View 1 (cartoon, rainbow, N blue to C red):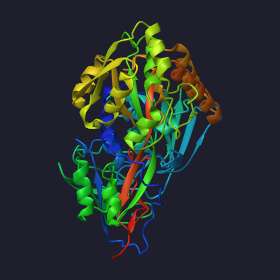
View 2: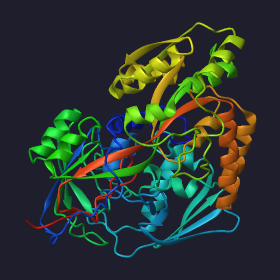
View 3: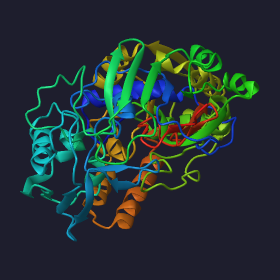
View 4: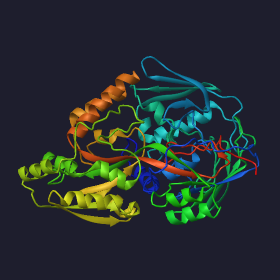
Length: 506
């Protein structure tokens, strides 16, 4: 959940989705999400197993994939949203236009939209919601509104946003928390309650256990396919599989690769493999010796057998640059780096580090698979890697805030977060003015293809500088019981749109 913003709150989303990805597996081949062979039951309840529970429900002031995953599109909506392929499409807006100069965005609202309180949505609610994001640095998405000049409502059904300069990412930013629309003057305590416009309402929250949504029968759009959704939070992967097998769950997300055979062997589940923008990132502290030496960084990348590491993780694909396949600017950068133990040794010798001691600081919820592979691979080139497993709060303090680390492993899950490498103040400590210039040009470019080309150029420079290593681009595994149809397959670490999900009548 890292966007190009640098606020520390954005890192909380890493924890949410990081736990999820450690449970990926590549064993099953992709399957259709529609598994139902019966007539959908409109009164059905679907129980979904998730890993990490939100600490509160205030998506305006609390970052994290755990919130976006369940609240966006289900409880709260924006003018636009994004598909599983990260394509932008209208939501509360029936349509929108962008001026040729990329400065003016005009949105026409759908008719008949009401908040869960029963109050009708107007353009004034949109203006107030967005103006708050622009003015309040404590609200999620504030940095994405830095180039917003004006937000206006010419009439009750129209919203116009004017930027000071073009921003290729702005429309995409509106698909996130900063683009959600809230009722003007509402006094709902968003930490424990809600007042959205979505196809579901919050029914109850049993903290430490479940969150339940009920179908919004007055929803302005197409009614949800099930009457109730129960999110059951099970942080232990074995317990999750056991809950699925004993019939407590209809859907289990984040299936552990080592436990997937247990589900397959029952013959009672369909397992799907989904694509993500999850980037298993081995961060280098570019400002700290010896990682400030490009030869050392290159040697570490050369020492990693990426194919073997992906096999050990059990999910996803190799990735040799900062942009995943689902994001603009993706290019296969496997030509930049390869697995070459002898060259790695030679570079370390040249840099004066034939015997090198380094520490890998890693949040404890990631498990031991990645550290074990890195310890083994680095040992082959004379690097002794000490693994320091810490609580996430400690990681935030030591690594993210104080930059007190050598190497770190974190799963960066947010789409379009390349801007982290164009920010010299980010915890990577990577500072390349050419990359920063290319990124700025990419944002200002109004033509999407030209913008993507600039991002690709910048991404290649980042990889050639060995600013980090990208161990893998992750995948997610979901297990569904027969009868469940329409459950999302891709990008579910960041959000799960349940409006079209159905359960067959028994």
